Image 1 (cartoon, rainbow, N blue to C red):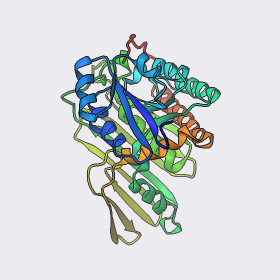
Image 2 (image 1 turned 90 degrees about the vertical axis):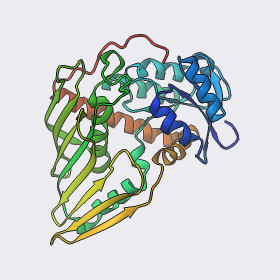
Image 3 (image 1 turned 30 degrees about the horizontal axis):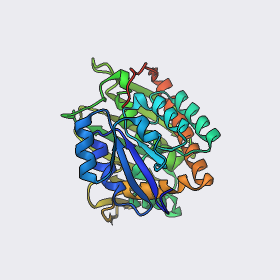
Image 4 (image 1 turned 180 degrees about the vertical axis):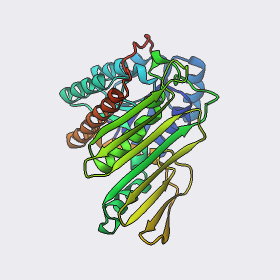
Amino acid sequence: MGGDRIRVGVWGLGPHAIGKVLPALGATRHCVLAGVTTRNPSVLAEVATRFGCRAWRSPNAMLEDSEVDAIYLATPTGLHDDHVREILAARKHVWCEKSLTHDPWRSLSLVTAARTADLALCEAFMYVHHPQFARLREVLAQPTFGEIASATIRFGLPDLARPGFRYDPALGGGAFLDVGCYLIHFVAELFGAADVVYARFETLDRRVDVRGRAELVLAAGGHAFLEWGYGLAYRNEAFVWGTTSAVSVESAFSKRDETRLVITDQTGGVTVERIAATNAFVAMFDVLAATARDRTARELWWRAAERQAQAMARVASAANLNLTPSPRPSTG
């Protein structure tokens, strides 16, 4: 390792990686951006110059570099299975964009491989590292909130000018793997295991699912109602209804500036809590750094990836969605 900082290579340079991941790595206390790789040489050179890091002309060159401790994988979801296996074979830790793979059973297999190799395998849901989520957890745990009656969670995006792999089944596209996964993860993180009552996915004549909804029964009682999709007015929200209080969460997943929790008591009184602007990606990387040093930290992330894969499988099965397309070969 590079002193006390984890040296991270980034594989894949789409708009998300360039706009969110690379700046965050440059701002962390416990990580350093070692370099980047992508199959597009012009993008590679420009990004490496902009961020002052190494530019590996191939993933193999990055994987063979002894001065890299961990790889942040930002290639299309449908390629993750092969790419994660290559990274593990090179004895590097893996921090991977959600969804971990395009197939929950392959995700479980990767966790087994990482655990056997004693290497980190982390599915990077950044929103749980924002102070808003910690505060929401505290609010729901207070006895004054009462029992959970229901949770309603929505995440929808308009059609993007640069959709990337999102509509390509061979690359693991589809709204469930891209945005629906956040809602499944949110429920598991806050409420634990849940049984699926109903799930439906819509393709709207596209080659992938573009909208979906599901109803879950929570282990502690109450129901969760989930809606997600593409081609919708932007929504990014959660509402939890308790027997004595309720809480609305603005910007539940993607964060911009200051966010808010709006808490309503049993008589309709409203309290607004403002959460200061925080870069959730920076906070996430400082947490991920521990997985390169500590097996106990790695175990927590292995278990989280297993829970997510199992929960995704339950919802997909209820909707009769096939999550096992055959990705076309690519180096990312």
